[in-house]
Image (tube, rainbow, N blue to C red; front, top):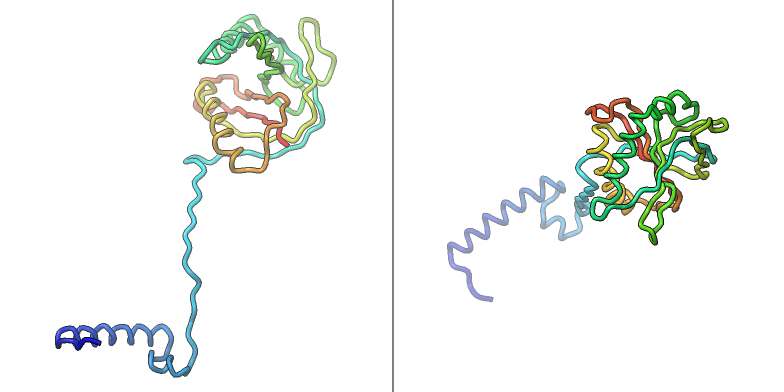
Length: 217
C-alpha cells in the first residue's frame, strides 16, 4: 500500500472524524464499537419516489349500473364527412331541431332518471360511411306522434362530468377518456351506444353542465 503524504493523511483524518461524529449521532455508538458488535444499528428502507401523471386536470366520474331504459326523440342518418367526422352534420341537426321546436317538446316530455337532452349514435355503417344519430330524452311511456323510441341496453356505465362550452369541452373529454382513462383502468367499451347528456339550456356557457355516459365491461 503506498504511503500517504501529510496533506492526504490530514484530509483523511478530518473526513473520518466527520463521518464518526455523524455515525454516532445517527446510531448512538462509534464506528469502532459497531465493528466490535457493541450496540445496535438503525436500518432504513431505500427511499423510493413514485410519480404518476394521468393528465393535468382530474376527471370526475362515477360508476353506475342500470337496467335497459327508453329514450324518445328524432333521428337522422348522417354522413361521416372526412377528417372532421360527423361533427358538422350533427351540429346542423341540432340547429334544425332547435329551430323547429323539437328540443322544447323533448324537454317537456322528460320524465326519466336522466334529466336533459341526450345525443346518441345508435348505429354506424362502415359500408355506407353513415351513422344514425338521435336527439332524444328519457321517457317512460309510449312515444308521442312524430317521435321514435329506442331502448338503451342494460349496462354498467362510467359517467364523466363535463363543465364548459359543449363544443369545446366534450371533444377534449372524449380524447382524455380514450388516451388516459381507459389505459389506466381495467375496463373497456362494451360496444353498445355511448350517450352525451346535455343538462344546460345554453350549451355555449362556460358553466354549462354535460355528461358522457360510456358503457363498459
